[in-house]
Image: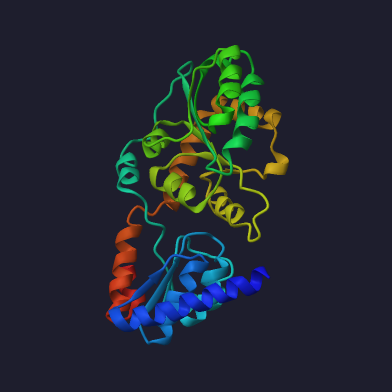
Length: 306
């Protein structure tokens, strides 16, 4: 029943998109993944309109994989994207566009820290990860060696219903903590951190790379395509952070990892420098150049590489 309903909705979307393409006569059509993009992109491609899809993850999404043989060009967030290997001739790595606030934050060098100085820890998990982080991080900080715990300063995203219990732990162990359900200035928070503990969605990894901050990344489990794991693996292989699957992570392990990194600040600095190599601060410009080349029906790989 669900499949039939989805098919009907997509068919209606396709017919509506065909009418819209016929009315607008677009120079190009650009899609960013997800099933709602399938009808308009399919309609544009079948009408002979130059088409481009962008996939920001290290695993091509299912909608984009369906569209890939039918579009003019494919832009990717990473150099290698699992599932897109057969389309390499029309694939261009542009990176994933980031906000201007991320570009500004990237101008800040990795924060220096002498022995005995505060250690800034940033924790966030997105809408599907904040609960796990609330269960994981406070007991991990409590498990730190007594001589290290007073150094830690926590900035953590918490769901409203978890706020009181998370704050109670930090208050009890005497660790200063700034807790909010949402941070409007997240790029600046990332820039101020010595270490980030987070999920590894494509936007998160892109921002960590552009700003250049080391992270312990815990991919969201259960995803069909394991895209967050693939994103984290790319950053980890580059030396920009550490990937630990959720089933392998617990407060004791996290406490040990944080303690080891506090004791070896050069490892954090090296990881910050390596993360920058993954970052693509000019992704928006490269993607715009690619769209213009596709719309003009020019050789697009050369245009994007310029």
